[in-house]
Amino acid sequence: MEAAGRVRVIKEPSKKGKKVVYWMQGAFRVHSNPSLEYAIRIANRIGLPLLVLVVLDLGYPEANYRSFKFFLEGLADVKEGLSSRGIALHLRKGEFEKILLEYVVDAHMLISDAAYLPVMRGLRDLVYRGAESGIIEVEPNVLVPVKVASDRMEYGAYTLRPKIRRLAPLYAGVFEAIKYKGERLDDVLDFEPSDHDKLLKGQVEYVHPCSAVGGSKQAFRILGEFLRNRYREFAELRGDPGVQAETELSPYLHFGHISPLQILEEAKRTGAPNGNYEALFEQLVVRRELAHNFTLYASRLDSPSKFIPGWAAETLKAHERDQRDYVYTLEELEAAKTHDRYWNAAQSELIERGKIHNYMRMYWGKKIMEWSETIEDAYEAMVYLNNKYALDGRDPNSYAGIGWCFGLHDRPFKERGIFGKVRYMSSEGLNRKFNMVYYLERVNNIGSDGRL
Ligand SMILES: Cc1cc2nc3c(=O)[nH]c(=O)nc-3n(C[C@H](O)[C@H](O)[C@H](O)COP(=O)(O)OP(=O)(O)OC[C@H]3O[C@@H](n4cnc5c(N)ncnc54)[C@H](O)[C@@H]3O)c2cc1C
Image (cartoon, rainbow, N blue to C red):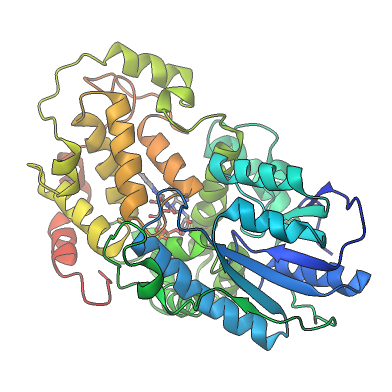
């Protein structure tokens, strides 16, 4: 029996409804999904039929052809998985709020995935307010439920880590599939997930798709390949942009195609030296859940001055008029046309592959700060480029990663121009630490499968 806190009752039903609805919005998977298993348990217990609702809202903020295609690929696996478990799927196309309000009219219970970004939390509040059904929120995509881990915005990994470590054993393990015993309702399919061209062309901004394919099946294939070929080097080589040692799972984690708990369980089973498990836990749980903590408790994400620590805000303000040797427009940045070949390679990686190697992602952000007229311009450019091109964008990690460039979750360093006491990164530092020729070669040779 898992510890409390993953499931939260938002409200009890005010009248008896006709069905249980699981609104799948953060965890697009049918296995190891506590929201789905919880919905099945409730439907079985109260003897009402269950359906799973997925809404395709083409107005989703900052989404485009690239991200929608990846999302739709994931839905194909959801459709197949639910069918094999005898559970109805409603794939509806339209505005979230309008469609959700249709469903809560005669639902007895609405189960939903918790959200951590202001825009999706706001949407939930609107739906919850209009519902007569009961509402239950589940956190399917983190190891330790975010509010259980901490009731405040943490200063950094060093303050969250001990809390997570203490609670982790209570929440570890995968979720067993519960057999659904209720009536099989009809599917309602406004669209076929495989029709992405028909659904998206001319309807959403066109950003050319990456070769990475979305969905749980693909996530497991990549996990298997990582565990066989790269995991043993993860602790040692993950930080080196010249080497391919990362999991490559962030897009799948973003869409909930795979659960972090499953990744940890599979990693444990390999018997690889423990340092690798510790390194994976640090990224996948401590850092990732620090990002969730940040976006849940930050009141605003529209400007770094609203959330970075006082020392960082002060020092950046003190240096706001410092001379910038290079200033690039957003168009120049987007086109990867700067004087810096390492930065251009990182931007090309973002455009072609839909993500940047973690170390280069830090460098990418720091240089945008250095080459922008103002801190606000830099933040805007980073959010725009990251969320437009990254398959893992529009995530708590996006805002925490970008925020980190401005001093979030970090400490002061020796004072210098533009950055003040905020950490600085240089191309000389890259040359000192890594063989950057390998990184440039890797980006030049991005294959047709999008792999480096
Ligand atoms: C400017 C900037 C922007 C970023 N934008 C995003 C983003 O949009 N989406 C995103 O998922 N990550 C973002 N990150 C964090 C990090 O770069 C990526 O999570 C990581 O590179 C993803 O690749 P991977 O899955 O192969 O990572 P791995 O190294 O294999 O790590 C496994 C998992 O751990 C988590 N993780 C790894 N590094 C971090 C980190 N620094 N912070 C939080 N979680 C981490 C991710 O979920 C990742 O999938 C950003 C970082 C920076 C500096």
